[in-house]
Length: 91
Picture 1: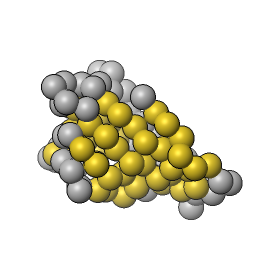
Picture 2: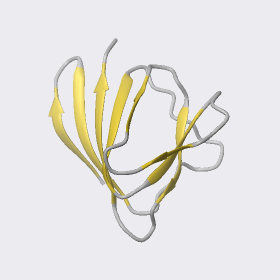
Picture 3: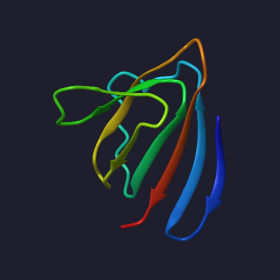
């Protein structure tokens, strides 16, 4: 579930709740905007193209993903909600 918390011309803030969802096989997010993501609750594993190791994320972990940096969600906890705060920004 995605809840838009703020929308301005150059920034958008969303609360995302995942319940075991993952990116489909072969799918990569490839966005024109940057994305800073913070895990508030739960856990997930993020894959970033070109990185040798997937990135485990839990409460308090964050990452800044530059525009056009392909990434995907490899795993989210199926037993509890994973709550993300995502800030999308124009560069």
